[in-house]
Image 1 (cartoon, rainbow, N blue to C red):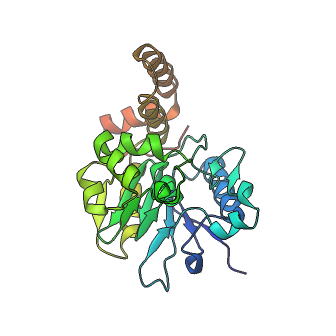
Image 2 (cartoon, rainbow, N blue to C red):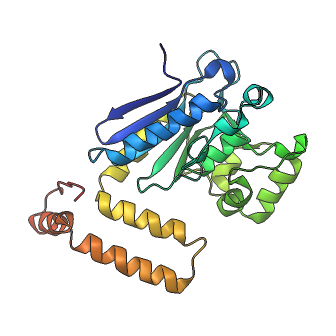
Image 3 (cartoon, rainbow, N blue to C red):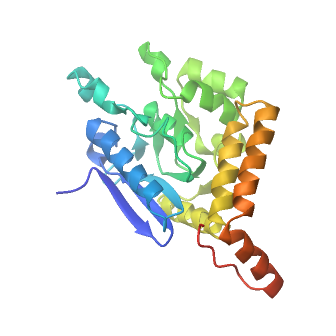
Length: 261
């Protein structure tokens, strides 16, 4: 039986793949629980340092990374299953985690699908991709973080236009506005995300995780809180085995051998 959410590890990288191409990778209860279980594996495995969220678009004439909530599931009375207690929508958008996740987008990411992307830490997208929050055109609002994450990602004016019109915007525009880290050719999203993930894995994982935590907090916390948080994380990283290894490797002019501890 095919898994509706696939999980694969390549070296230090976990690849989490939405696998409902026949339903435009829409989120139902199985997808939500599957993503949550995959994030659990990512967070609990000390040998995995970073994740990639991808989607199977096989057989789709016009590729869709994720069409958002499965309306059939909602119509059948199963709307609550699309959220989990720890992760919110898709088992992911509000999940507390320490390891970064890169979205690998090839196709349309709309409504809740766009909100899954916005909950990731970095985005690699193909030139044929697009993003949008279409909820207002159905007399709904984006309820999984999109209304505050999209303005942070592309600026208030551009986000207001996208949200109030419900019209999608291209991956090129998302890249120009700072939402997308890297643009790649069609079908190359996963390869591009793997390249970025490997570059991140060259850095010390403890420092990566601590830095991510502070960068995310910068959007909501006061300078005083951020200074306290930075000092705490700095002390924890400084006292780790990897700091000694990093300094020794620098002195010996060799690549460091990170252990994540």
